[in-house]
Image 1 (spheres, helix red, strand yellow):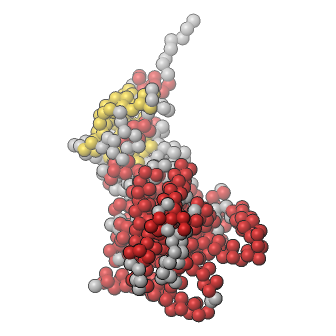
Image 2 (cartoon, rainbow over the protein chains, first blue to last red; image 1 turned 45 degrees about the vertical axis):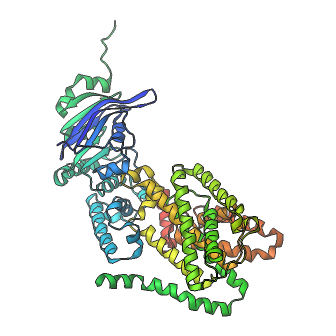
Length: 258
Length: 324
């Protein structure tokens, strides 16, 4: 069964059709890219999948269960985690606490457990703390655990966002421009990390990215959006040659006049 | 068995401190004159108010201007218990029952008010809570059974230094644990970025209402202590100005800092008393000192950090890091 199925989803803001009749499917362990020119509706698709918006029509299913219109926190608990295009960490919290927040409903503490000082709460807290440190270590931020998120360099903030998303134990990870603003060295590391997430953790990953080299190298399949519509679906090599995609990015080739 | 031992070890110091308030109160009562003792008790009540509002305004980032309204509910409900429902109750039983009733009544009001208003943000929430605080006051003002415009007389003086500071320790201790637990980090996350918090699986509405309800509970307890300490309550004590006073404590202490709220509550309760030499200029000097304090430390006395993590050098490096 597909991990994620987006079926003919449409969303309008007033008269503006942000996304129309978009469909996507993703299996566990699959890496799919979502590309398109600026304003094509890529982030809107992410916002539909994560419940920031409810689609006007169409359906979104996670492991066969419809999640369209559910609140974002419920969709997260169905196993979907995301990062944001403009980084949205908790700026005045430490790197460690940023990750810890992802364990909120999983800490087995609850309101009473957190204040009563019981052994059960302590054990649960220690376990969560170990897991948070492991996640920080995984993205290379173990040494910065006490640094405020806002004081971290840009590339580290992007990696912290991925660690925070992983803390919610997702089956599907949505990465919104993970390579934006990172240097070439960081980009190579990021690609390795993304492959590792897919291979070792078995996550399904959907990536929005403008860096074509990254997209073409890591993705098995690519969906191309333009003006809110799907204009192409296929393997990287096919997408590269697709005339509609080239037109969307570079404009129509007009025969020279005169 | 180990669980019981662990729990005892973890809580014995706190519980011993709470119990120690009774001998301490007796000693202070013999040593301090009643005027000073009264100020010390007001400090305690203001600490509970400031720390509980800090959970709503500072930690969860939901700007409420209605804290005096919850204090009023706690004061009147608890006073109604000891005056109307259970007169001549012994102090050891009457006060806890009255405080619990006052706190729960305030928490219920917080829950009912929180559900519709917490959809609002920022200024709109502030205005809505301000309105609710005033509505509560006006309803009480027109309720004859609790004295109406005359105020409520003859409340037994069940509260003392010891009971007030036992509540202070419980309130500060419990809220400290909550805010610093993995569970309580959700409050901070909502303040920092509500959209991201929801995307991390946090039921933001639930946590906002929870902050509001818990904050209102402690405001109610503070109101109950206030009523049973001075023995007479009038709605004028719970006006909009009282709400502002508590907000000032939270802001001056540093939004989100529990120790900052405690410090500010102490400072702002003592300050007007120290300024008594100024006679009619007292409140002008008070206001000017507030302005000076906010100009010199715009992020509050402790800048949102806790006193336990505050080091001079640390704050310096943090500042240079955020400037870079």
